Structure formats: structure tokens, C-alpha cells
Length: 333
Ligand SMILES: *[C@@H]1O[C@H](CO)[C@@H](O)[C@H](O)[C@H]1NC(C)=O
Ligand SMILES: CC(=O)N[C@H]1CO[C@H](CO)[C@@H](O)[C@@H]1O
Image 1 (cartoon, protein in one colour):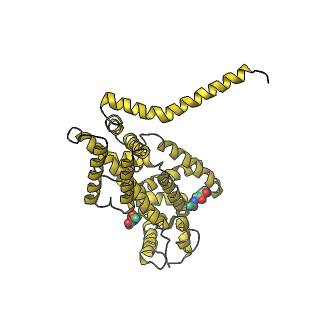
Image 2 (tube, protein in one colour):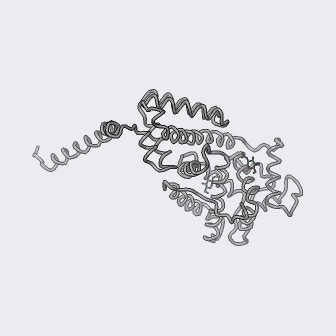
Image 3 (cartoon, rainbow, N blue to C red):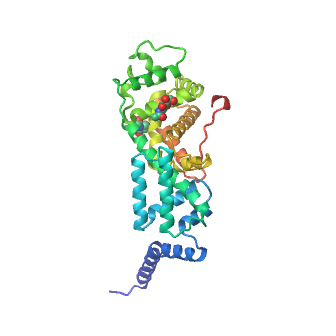
């Protein structure tokens, strides 16, 4: 075989690159961490708390550092927190405070952090932990609501549905429970009960939250949806947007918005259903704006406009200072 210097050099370069990347991934991270710890006297979690700006950058940083930790003790602590979220133990302030204080103490003992010297750390770290696992707990709640099928035998469900009509159509009584009139607020047939399908009660809750809390805005959006040329099905599109909101929370992309929001509000604010419902209202109002601007020829363009909408929302969520605010005139809030 002929000696080929070019192939030799390229193989050598490949070997160097792969060695360097292995070094960067496996060796340098712990080394850099060790070096910083020696020079600054602070562990990674402390550096994040003190150096990263309040909100998503700091909370994301802490979450990543904890989830990437190789320490068995940290892993056990995370299991304890995940279980607490599944068991809904963050919902009462007393039990949440106890979990947070246990967590802070455990981390300080694992990382040799002196509580008396590093009081700012314990507060910043504790607040972040409460928001991270508050979000986990909320996801379980959302999944439960999504998994609860609309049940026409259930008085509570029926009442919510009828209230939705009253909020959207205050000047018109619904003549009967099963009626062609449901189409006026964008359901498919005579009985909305089958329209909730994949989203369960979450779809209805979102719609009724929107109609109940922002009645003027909801009615304005409804009137757009009944536009003779560029109309769409209000309720059906609304349920589809529940799906969009849910998937953004589920895959974690909504975290930038939620983390920024919760850390801006007064202390102890943990992600809640209210935040989810408001996020949904924001999506609905913005989607309606986009739809009216696009002036689609028919509902057949829904898929295209929806995916354009999703792309732009995801782009916003990608920015670390993302915070959605409902653009609603003050008198409607
Ligand atoms: C929402 O609409 C998109 C686009 O038409 C579709 O792919 C998706 O399955 C719908 N989701 C729900 C829950 O209706
Ligand atoms: C689960 C949840 O938050 N449901 C709420 C949805 O919105 C309606 C209307 O505001 C409330 O009554 C529900 O409690």
C-alpha cells in the first residue's frame, strides 16, 4: 500500500480532536469546578446564586447544576424533592417551607457551606428550589386535569359548560343543553361534550377562565372568530391552544417565562394553575391578532398559521429574559 501523508495527517487530527473533546467533557468540567472552588472559595451553586441575574438565568443554572450532579447524596435529595412534588406536598406553605429548609440544610452540609456566613445563598437557593419543584408539582396537576374526561353525568362539569355560555353570550339564553347554538361559540355539533377529547377538563377550564376573567376581551375575540370571511371556530381553536400551551409547559420551554414571572412576584410565589391559565389567555389573544392580520381565506389555513404562531412563541421563550404580559387595556383586568 502506498504511504499517504494526507490521510495520516487527517487521522492524527481526528484523534487530537476526539481526545480534546473527551477532555473537555469529562475532565475539564470537574477540573474547572475544582479550580474555581479553590480560587473563589465558592461551590458551583453559590457562584450561580451570586453571579447569575435573578429569574430564569439563575433558576435554570441551579436546576442544571443539581440535575447534572454526580454526587449520590445530591441524587438522593433530588429523589426526595421529586417525590414531594408527586405527593403534592408543596401546596401548603407550612409543608413547603419545611421541605425547602431541609433541602437548604442538606445542600449546605454536602457542600460544606456555612449557614451563618452565607445567608444570602440560603435565601436565593431556597427560593429557586421552591420555584423549580413548584413547577414539577404543577405539571402533575395539569396532567390530572388533562386526563379527566368531560363527563356529562357530572354536575360540576355541566355547570362549568353552561357558565361558559353565559359568560360569552350574556344577552342570549341557551334554549336547551343539547342545541345547535353551541356552534355560535365555536363547538362542532349540538353537544360540546365530545369536543374536549385530548385535553379533557383542562380545555374547558382554560376557556372558562378566559371568558370569566377577561369577558370583554373574550367576547371581542369571539366576535373576530365569527367574522363572515376570516372566521374560525372559537372553542375548537381554544382547545387546540390548550394543547399548545400544555406542550410548551410539558417540554419545559415555558420555564423561562414562568421562572422570570415567579421570581419577580413577591417571595414565596410558586408556579400555579393561575399562571398556566394566564399564559393560555396570552396565547389566545396573540393568536387571534395574528389570525386577523393574516386574513386567511378559510379555516384550511389553520395548520399553517398555527405553526407560524408556535414558532414565534418558542423563539420568545428561548430568550432568557422572556416574560409574557397580556396586552389588555387596564380597564379589562
Ligand atoms: C391542533 O391543531 C394542529 C394543527 O392543525 C394539529 O396537528 C393538532 O393535532 C391539534 N391538536 C389538538 C389537541 O386538537
Ligand atoms: C382548575 C382551575 O383553575 N379551574 C378554574 C378555571 O377557571 C374557572 C373560571 O374562572 C374557575 O372557576 C376554575 O376554578
